Image (cartoon, rainbow, N blue to C red; front, side):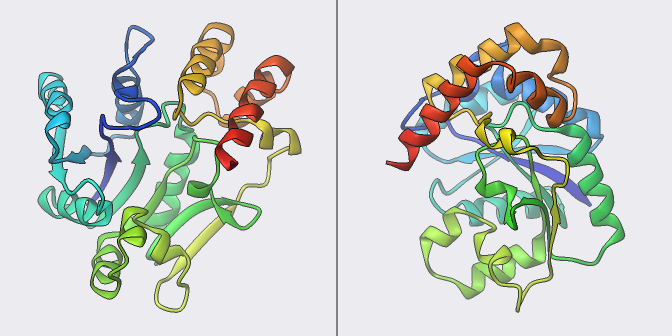
Length: 245
C-alpha cells in the first residue's frame, strides 16, 4: 500500500512551532494535510518522542489525524517505523514546511511510480532531486524495503537524518528514477516557497493575500504570478543568500 508520511516537529530552531502557525483560518499543517487528502491516500504524520511534540500529537488527535512518534535525529528510522506500523510498502515523503505542494505533479508522480519498477522516484531540476531545492512544492516516493536496506548498510546519523540521501546518491544499489522538470523558466529559480523562517512565513501570507486564486494551481502558474512581483522575489532571494552563509 502506498501512503503519505509527513515529517513534522515543533522544535524548529529558526521558527519554532511553524507548522501550527495560522494560515487560511487553520494551521499550516492542517492546510497541507487537507490538500493532500485530495489524493485519496492514507496520511500519517511522523513526529518525535520529545516532550515538546506532545502538543503536536494532541493537536493531531483532536483532528483525527494518524501519527507516529520516533527518534528526532534518526528520521530514517522514524519513517521506517511509521511505514511499518501503518502497513505502507511505499512512502510518499512530504515535509511539513511545504504547504503549497503541487498536488497535480505529486499525483502524476504516484501514477508513474505505480507503472514503474523502482526504489526511488522524484522530480529533478538540473539533475538534482527536488528535495534538495528551495522550491518547496514537491515530494518524493521511496520503497520501504529500500529504506530498510539503507538503514542496515549505513551508520552515519547525518545520512539517516536526511532519509533518502543514501538512496538517490547510490544508483548502483538502488533503482533510482528522476523525472526532469521541463516547463521551468530561469526566473523560477528565484522562488522559495519552503517555510523555514519568519521571513518565509511572511512571504507565504503575502502570497495568500495577493495570489490566493493560484494556490491550487500547478506550481508554474503560481510562479508566473510571483515572478511579476519583484519586491517579493527580492525578499526570497535575500533568504536564500542568508541560508548559504
